[in-house]
Image 1 (cartoon, rainbow, N blue to C red):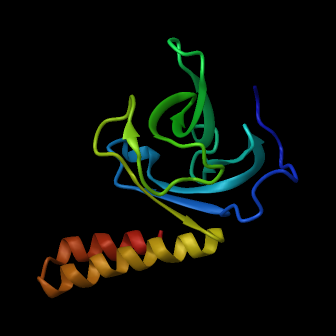
Image 2 (cartoon, rainbow, N blue to C red):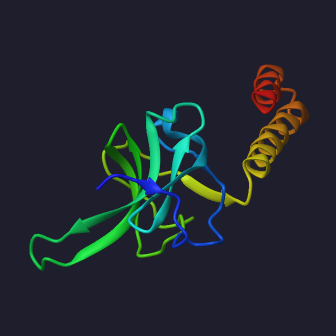
Length: 151
């Protein structure tokens, strides 16, 4: 089943942005924005750098043994599940992620009320990395961290 337009049944408190970092699949890392669609009763997110490449969405899985359907959240690359978190929750989980076809490590996931809040958090993290590199006089790492904070 495809994604439906944003529906009134979607959780009201759905975060507008999700930050994925530390995944073994580097391209999957970044900020995912609310797409405006709902799939399986939950919001669908797309990667801000490649919305046609990476999605974060709730998907069903039916057991071949029991016939019971359970849900989980998947970070997928063009439909291929890289990482997933089994849960019936309608909001993106921040823990419980596992690698499917994506290489380890599994990502850290954080949710934000707005894309601006997610971008600020990313920039602050990079700035802190730059400050740490400066303190240890690692000039190339400091330059890279501060440059990444501005991207």
